[in-house]
Length: 136
Image (cartoon, rainbow, N blue to C red; front, side):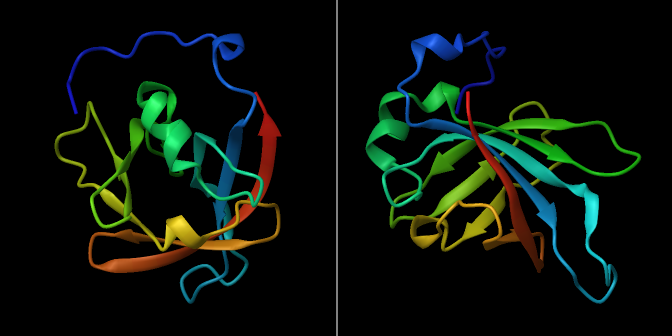
């Protein structure tokens, strides 16, 4: 991935399958009620089964972005990146001290409100609930 500055992308220039997806931390031992302040907002194309559409991703890589949200921290901006073997990674362009995070089985996940997805952050796996999926 290059480190060139992100260029604005016009929503009207993207295929209609692109969605804005919000993930919020689900219940876990340190957060028994979950945490709406910890999560991610992603922009990605979804197929008819609400899975990430790899073909559209490939044609629109620059548009597939992610924002990491944490309480009392600045947002970290990055991209949704596909690796050989089918894995999806959240790569943070301008934050070299922030390691990539792994979307656990993202290729099989349905991104619909109420579903859960897992993201590997360092040596820990966290579960997030899909709370919103909307058209751009």
